[in-house]
Length: 282
Image (cartoon, rainbow, N blue to C red; front, side, top):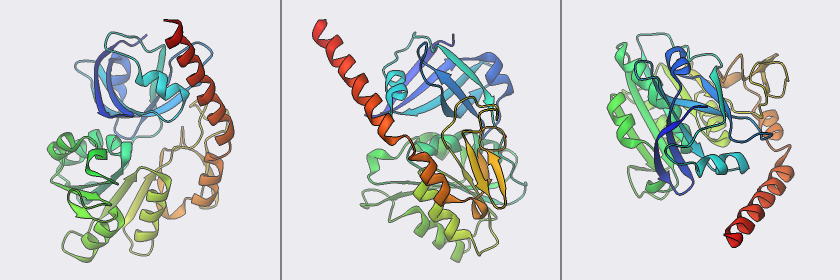
């Protein structure tokens, strides 16, 4: 069982964990993910590999507490063990060398850009990261991303820091000026990725989005994470998670991600009740 060696609270509901996983760290590539469980009989959730160090054998993940499992994981402390972690899974990011790559992160999606932008910069590409959030205190890993890219752009809905507006607006400004990208990779909430896809659709700029549909086994066997990409049906766990943004059927993807909202709410309410009862008992 991987042991947590570092924990950082990034926001009240977003935590960063580093844990020992030498075999995963030695094989991981930017763009891949892990699947983990935190309790026997519990669900298995996919989490993007934010960073990895083959030499030290350490893997870094960022967790946003949105469901029962992520909340239980978020309560873990340094020294605790994660029940099991499987990975690395999925296809690494494939971006041709020699161009200007713009990575766009929304919310905890910015974590997935960390190791990717570092690799692209190290191989000599020009790199820009655009981070977006409603408020400045929701922007994640600013210092870490500033170190691994040539240019960091911050966007907030309320103008509390950086550009006041949406990431698509700042991207459009780059596209209209001397900072036009050759490649765009967007990772974050589905509405943001759909908006990025629409922004670059007719420009000839190669654009990829990281899809995070419902996932169970992570090997392509269950078929749960299927995504329609053009005329093909793909499985995010083995064919992705990165796909051509212009070809993704976002309407279908959004509908599939909402299939179990009722069940997820009930599970969260049951877990909250259990936690409250445990608190009273102690």
